[in-house]
Image (cartoon, rainbow, N blue to C red; front, side, top):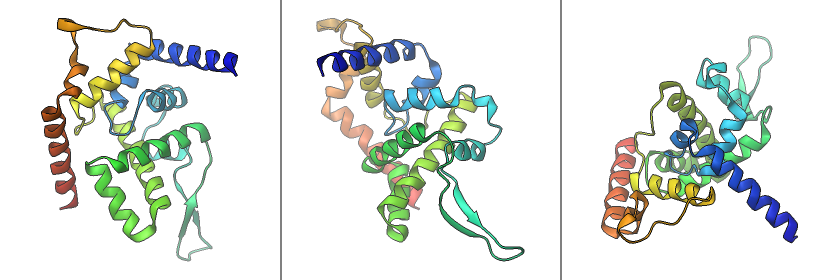
Length: 202
């Protein structure tokens, strides 16, 4: 068990070291609910985003598109997700969806709306699908998440740096991640996220 723990720790460090200068991984980490493990896992599965000429292609690649049953010219019936494609990345996206659903913001509002009609599990998968579409747009356009919380992104980035072996910052050398310790700043960012959620609901 000790050897396994050492191997896992070494793997985590290697992932962090590779991700530090990876603009795509850092961009995905601006999304609420997406941490280093999820961002790196998604990018490992995607590779070059230009392989997918639409967000729907990426959704299908991860097997998050609903199955469609149709007989002849009859009405199409949409069922459970296909689960075809990259199962590990799909599981990571669903994990990120649950995290995003717990935080204030548009993704939480979307989760609540779907949950009211279809239940928790289907709502989480719907958020995972929306996250996939969001990832495609951010990576294709080279933009960060519009409703990113800067202090939270900074703390994610700092955690990645520490995991990669960077030294702790002390005293006057405190970096942007220290802002997350300031309650007033956290509260202000949460308020902005809540306002974005209300706008989405309207």
